[in-house]
Length: 106
Image 1 (tube, one colour):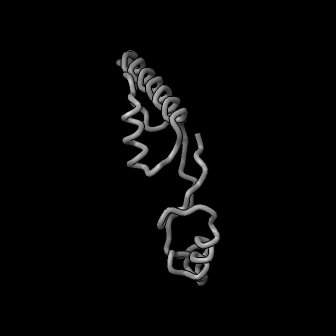
Image 2 (cartoon, one colour):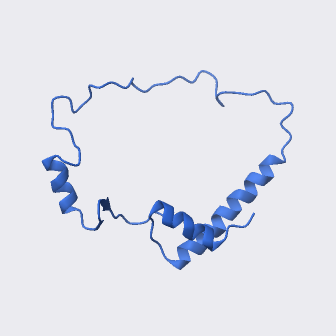
């Protein structure tokens, strides 16, 4: 399945990303290869394979339970209105409205 550059441009607009023509072409090529691989996987005969919830037996959740109390309990919450958040946002080198601009990771 071919991914067109127009599809990548549409995704860039939706995700509010900015990158050049070279990255757009590379991403279109890479996504096309991923989709081609997925099509290949669809052809695999898995009729004799039982369903599994996990690839490995005995896996358990090692994360803590969510709670309202956490490491910042009693400290000022870091929301967009706090003084610390305002200072951090102000000090950030590149901004676009409420968004902080970062280097692309491609």
